[in-house]
Amino acid sequence: MPPTPHRSTADSDRLRQSRHPATASRPPRSRRGSSRRSVRAGALAAAGLVLGAGLTACDSGTDDTSYGRGQIEKEEGIVVSSDFTEQQPSWRPCPAASVLQGADAGKPKPLPDGSRWECADMKVPLDWSKQDGKKIDIALIRVKAKDTKRRLGSLVFNFGGPGGSGVTGLPGSAASDYATLHTRYDLVSFDPRGVGESQGVRCLDDKATEAADAIDATPDTPAEVRRSEAFGRRGNAACEKNSGAVLPHVDTESAARDMDLLRHVLGDKKLNYFGISYGTQLGGVYAHLFPERVGKAVFDAVVDPTSDPADNAVGQAKGFDLALTNFLTLCAERSGRKCPTGPDPEQGKERIVALLEKLDRRPLPTKDGRKVNESVAVSGMAQALYAKELWDPLARGLAEAMSAGSGDTLLKLSDLMADRDEQGRYSNANDANTAITCADQKQRYTVEDVQDRLPALRKISPVFGAFTGWQMLSCTDWPVDGTSDQTVAAPGSAPILVIGTTGDPATPYAGAKRMADRLGKGVAVNITNKGEGHGSYGVGTCVTKAVDAYLLNGKVPSDGLVCSS
Image (cartoon, rainbow, N blue to C red; front, side, top):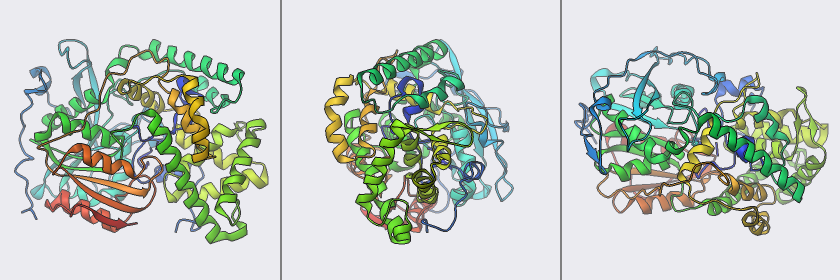
């Protein structure tokens, strides 16, 4: 799963897809697998979730590797056509975000220093093995470095998902998170293939997508299972009908090759990169394919490259249960018996389980007429656990549900998770998420596979375990086979900062160490952030200073650095 500001959800953000028509019985996923926040500040305000004060309390300065176009002619057996390498993006003022990108983002505003955003398109082959075939456009966005005399080149961001639009994600966070980096870097991002305005995958229409809310994400009876499977087949058929040509080509390896072409057309000899959540998986695949082209790279909220979907179900059940425990503990410490779940965290979980069982039988009403059932409530809770800034709204939502019989706040949180705007329009984040995941993932599970694992998962997390278990069916009956092996070994790469947060619900902390091990000896520099939420940069000064010192001055932090946020 799921921060916007980087609206969040790799194998990282799997707790999202209850809203995807092909996986309607699966657990809800985060908004755009990304960094520390789950939603942009503007989106919070628009949703009526404004935060209060409650629970959340040495280089010379130039880089001779970042200028001029670098080698791209041949790598991994692929010769890149001059049709692509000689293109010059035509940068222009950015339009407002499209519905596929998340229309609530609007038009990117200038940064406080007056810098304005520019947008462009980059041509890439739909199929990298058939470069004379169909071409597609990759949507780009950038803001030029403020200090042009000390410019270090471009810094390319991917905020995760998979399925998150970088064209909307970067402007939503640059002013608050990346102002220091902007002094010497052009900040650049893009909509990966299949996302937003880069041949965005589209499945069911908005009305049919919203109907997924009524599908039980944890089917308890054979009839509920059949209903879920039927809805999933309907969604898969719609994906194939509307986006069948692109579905085989939205894999992470193809996106990594797009990113190397982006490096080239930007004029950089090496790729300076900041990947968050699924962005760490994309970065790892890039480093494997092009280790000698890695410049300075940062992986934050790191995906475990060794895990399969069954492992992910276990890992996320543990991760979200830990985050929920931490939320309930803080709620009890701050509010005591006034905490909606009570003064004892374990009893608080029992109260939440009882609430969910009640909602499974009788959903709560909301002011806009929609209902909050068990699936929608868990989606909202999962969204809130991405960042402590959403813990106040979560407490309010639980209080409304338990005491006032209202689902309003939980619905707003769930809408953020689903990337639904106030007009009832959905971005393609969830459709793209499924398409990219299933292009990468070879495993296809059965209902029996899930049911065999449910007792253990419920024991791990009575609240989230069943949801993460049913998520294993995300790619069952998908119209395209998964083929990528997602290798990340990168011998010969420049150092890559690998940052794991101990309380991260979506990309559990252990995955960072496994990513570091797979990148290879002498490549990864491990940083531990003791804290909460999905991502660490911009949350605590220790991690932020270490990253800035590396990206701006080339100072590599000590391997094993421990920070707190």
